[in-house]
Amino acid sequence: MSPLLLAVLGLVVPLALGALAGGRSLFRDPEGAIDALNVYALRFGFPALIVRGLVVTDAGLPREPGFWLLVPLVFIGCVAVVRLLAQPVAGTLALILAFGNVAYLGLPLVEATLGDDALALASVAVPLHLVLGLSVGPALLVRWAGGEGAMRWRPILTQPLLWAPFVGLALRALPPAGRALVVALVAPVAKSAGAVALFLLGLYLWRNRHRARQVDGWDVVHVGFKQALMPALTVGVAWGFAQVGWLSAASAQVLVLLALMPAAITTFSLAHDLEVGATRVGRAIVTTSLASLLLVPAGVWLVRGWVASW
Image 1: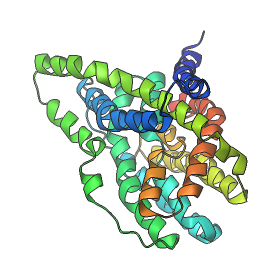
Image 2 (image 1 turned 180 degrees about the vertical axis):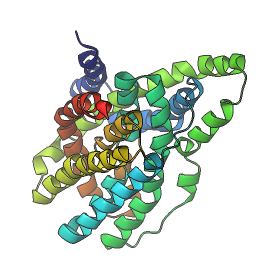
Image 3 (image 1 turned 180 degrees about the horizontal axis):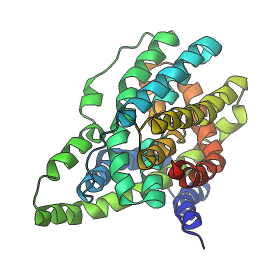
């Protein structure tokens, strides 16, 4: 069996188990279980995975300007098209474009398909997405969707995912024995992050399967922008940067994989908290996640083939 197929199956199995747990009503309070798993993954599992990814490798921080420019440039390009062609849903589109499922799905996918060095790159790239998703995305949602909510900065500044890369970078200064100790201590939690998050996503999709039956034309537009336009624009910009020496093939692989991710589950919490577009965002999470089951394997094949040859 090919390593790629094994990696994909390793992602599908916990997702299927989460859906099975929902279908068999194994949790007395499924919504409470989703909340608890979400807290564990966001505040413990993925911060530990990011710290481990940075400490375990000797690779330095990316120095190519394209690595730091690609994510904001692609987002700006996408929201410009959104504002021009999809004004009625510009707010919710801006939010899901800003915040893909780069932690729950992106980090496990990168680690499974590209290895530890790629995980270190992804651990640095994820905060770029988080800054957009926790600040610019909600701000555009409120502004473009006619909401009256106000930005809340405290939840952003206290988010462990945002600070995990800085902790990991600081711990890289330890001697080899100290780094080995850190890796040993955080490894059990870090290794659980992907499985827990995928199980959570499967449970969430089962609990919200009714949303997939309520889709309208604008929901299809959300899928098209998030799962087609954003990855295509990312590939195009990454290829251009690679041709002028601004981006390595290894960095391009990671950034393209992260761009393939569906809307983050957290976007629903943000929209609900701001009282703007929560229903539309909830459907976008379900529909883009379902679409990703087909599109992500194709993207992985592209990344490991054509993008790797840059």
